[in-house]
Amino acid sequence: MNRFVLADCTSVDAALSQLHDGAVVKAGGVDLLDRMKDGIEEPPKLVNIRNIAELRGIHETDHGLTIGPLATLAEISEHPAIRSQYQILSDACGHAATPHIRNMATVGGNLLQRIQCWYYRSADFQCLRKGKDFCFAFGGLNQYHAIMDYGSCPAVAPSSAAVALLGLNSSVELTSAKRGKRTVGIRELYVVPDANPTKFTVIEPDELLTAIVVPRPTPGTRSAYQKYGEKESFDWAIADAGVVLEMDGNVCRRAVITMGAASPVVRRSAQAEAALAGQPITEETARAAGRASVEGALPLSMNAYKVDLFPVAVYRTILLAAGQRDRDPSAAG
Ligand SMILES: Cc1cc2nc3c(=O)[nH]c(=O)nc-3n(C[C@H](O)[C@H](O)[C@H](O)COP(=O)(O)OP(=O)(O)OC[C@H]3O[C@@H](n4cnc5c(N)ncnc54)[C@H](O)[C@@H]3O)c2cc1C
Ligand code: SF4
Image (cartoon, rainbow, N blue to C red; front, side, top):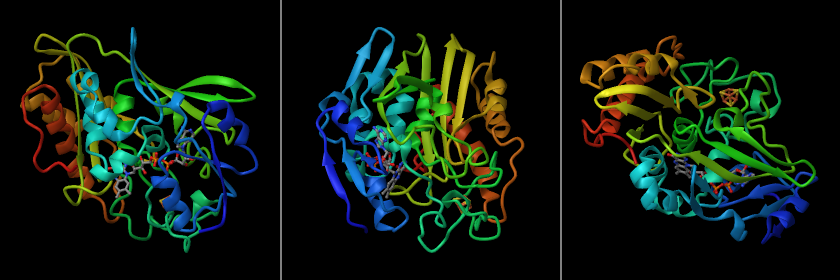
């Protein structure tokens, strides 16, 4: 790991004033320090935002929730209002990583963590996402990679929180000292690799993520998230699904179905959503939506199993959201 300056900040203004000349933000440090220890990044300065009180907290407002980016995954998963009205978010944050990591990891850092492609994470491989012109995964080990929408880089979206927050139509507030505040939707936060392989999010080097805004679900909304992995805990998803159902009695007026580890950027499945709209939630409609979620999938040489796994994840999560099934004991986390 390189030597670096640590700028410990206790206000947003102080942190913003430090963000220049290659300085990077450190929240919990779980992802950033891994990248530095693995030798894939050598920032000259870390701006520690961990002690900025104004970036903490989970606030209920007239319109929903405003979550400080320093709220930990554990705090979000245990918050009573989130547990009762935004189940998809408490499920996603409560089943990411391990209890230790959830106590340290912030939701802002979770949204902004980098991809886990093992070639990207190794200093020995210089690929497209590090500014070169080659992807090692297409002809190499690609069992954890994308099956949809991948273009030139099939590394998958890693953030469980993003799967939930996209389902809830959330947005983030970004703040810069020079340009002030702007609001960006969760989907728009992420840059697809074909648009710019070395830019992962739209956040500029002088910006901080200062809030996450979650609209209140309409009455009668039910939601859930489930993650499937190689082991019960301790790892990122190989398939995960978020489901938000706006119900009119037994009929689903509107569904939002989100998928994380299917593509480089967290995605909504319009096909799965269409399969549920105006339908009662039953085993049959949930299965049809699951099958629809992988329409158009193009698996790589080693990940065709994901084309079978995602429909199961989506189907079981729909039934969990609808209250027709318990949490899947074979789900991870
Ligand atoms: C074993 C293991 C298993 C895991 N499993 C999962 C899982 O199942 N699901 C999942 O979603 N994640 C998982 N993770 C990832 C983990 O949740 C993230 O690394 C963690 O949430 C990052 O949060 P942090 O606060 O430590 O971020 P940091 O490491 O501090 O920051 C991450 C990135 O975000 C930037 N950043 C952070 N906060 C801000 C801000 N407010 N404004 C601007 N930039 C900012 C940093 O510069 C950095 O680039 C796992 C991690 C491990 C080690
Ligand atoms: S999948 Fe993406 S991150 Fe991984 S080697 Fe290929 S270009 Fe690099």
